[in-house]
Length: 261
Length: 136
Image (cartoon, rainbow over all chains, first blue to last red; front, side, top):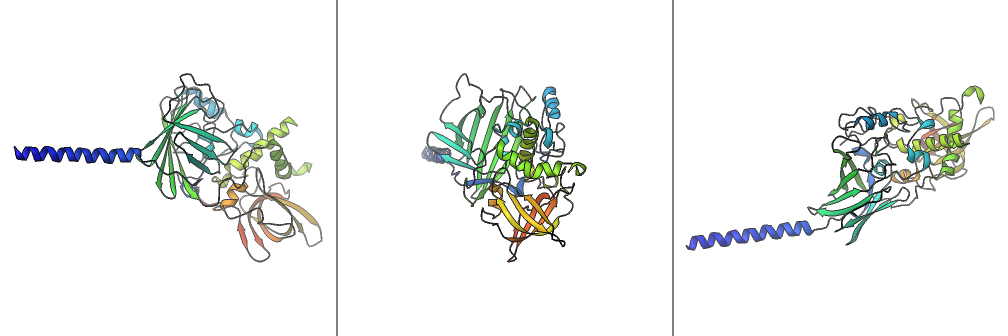
């Protein structure tokens, strides 16, 4: 009888301890502070979200992107400004053509830094490009009827004391997923998992779930490293006028056939 | 004009977009990326700005003829990461510029590195020509 009591007490104590540890872990909020730059040693910005074809050399035929037929055809029909076959003079990238927002995850293929401002009600994700920002609402739900927008509607939660999980729906269909022309529809459901692996490293795992364009969800990945150079020391703004000046100075002379110079 | 703007935007943003990692592709259509031209000249203007930095410099040949060169680097945000600032180059600086020049002979190109008169070297493109970083 005494032995049974001891065992029961031990079991209860063990359960209480495990419970306390679990609660402490789930309640712990990861520190995402810092200025996060694309890690050039681990993929950099790349051109494609395809894990098997980051340079975009096999665009439209990657083995890890489960295209629906129309999405593959659309990808192949696009003229990219980067990658293996850059078509500067006739690109169809709306972000390049019209200076439209790249949206997410496309923005993570730019050579710009990202910063997280964590508050009890929301995480604000700031980008040096634009400068654009997103609001990730914590302890919240998506609206029942989302109005399709460039950056969608994001809600978030913390997991395991080291990860911010962002769930986004309500995108419009105007952006490319990356620089290789991968399309998406308004059905896109993007899950982002930002995990601070150590003081200097942030990893982003993404799941792209768009039943309008792909036959099943697929994954992408980005790596970031802590930068000490300061945030937004330059405002990277897409300006048609400045682009024009740049082209006048460098593009036109380089593109002009020697015979007509 | 519309077409011109179209091309301008596409080129500028395109250069910006893929200049960071797929370095062998950068300017592949327009520049000779197999070798850098070495040019000694004087900086006439340094544009620290969007979509790319631009360095204007004059190069005088043996006959006294002056060529007005302009070379681009990556955007300011990238160059800040590489230790450059808006004050890295100044009008009047004597420089030796290593440039991937336009294939058509125009005095334009992509700056690879620049060496100042005091010997200080500023690298514009890290790892250029090297293997593309592997995916994770």
